[in-house]
Image 1 (cartoon, rainbow, N blue to C red):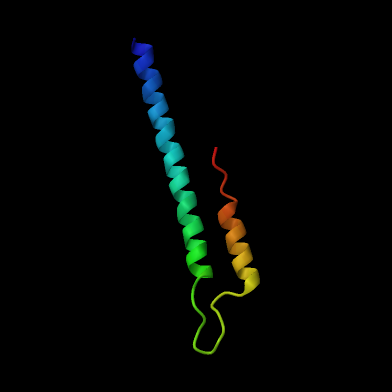
Image 2 (image 1 turned 90 degrees about the horizontal axis):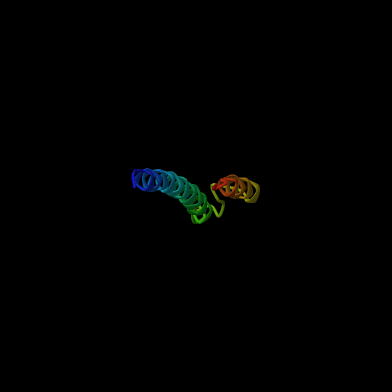
Length: 66
């Protein structure tokens, strides 16, 4: 029975690690979306150009969850 408890403990630790990675990925995606969604400035320009937004989004999407 001890093996079962150890297996459950190891599974819980792995699930916690997966949850942390998922939360990190969601945070990166949220950050990218918040920057992309910023309204234009009073002069009609944006803080980020199209290429910068593309690079930001690609970087956020790179996070591989294993």
